[in-house]
Length: 118
Image (cartoon, rainbow, N blue to C red; front, side, top):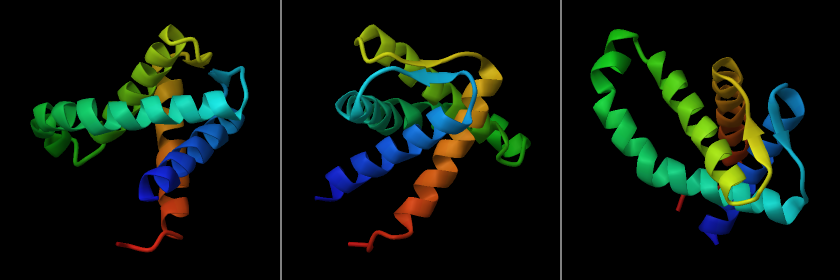
């Protein structure tokens, strides 16, 4: 059940980023957006920790600001992989990815506050 709630939160956060951030586009329905959210979750679960550990010294030197770049890269990678899978989700440009990742993080955090901790 928690997995489905997280998937729903990711889908809602991505939808807000699509609506707010110019350069993030999606053509499709809700089912496809859940597919994009699933791709985003898998990338964040498996690739995200590896990149974050490898870039820990740079993140430390920039007082955590490099984490925004990492999250932007993960969102950009989600766009590339989603497009390859035929899901029509695209992220264009570095600054678009960083700003989109910031929006997704904020919306995810706000929506996650409503979930009970297990």
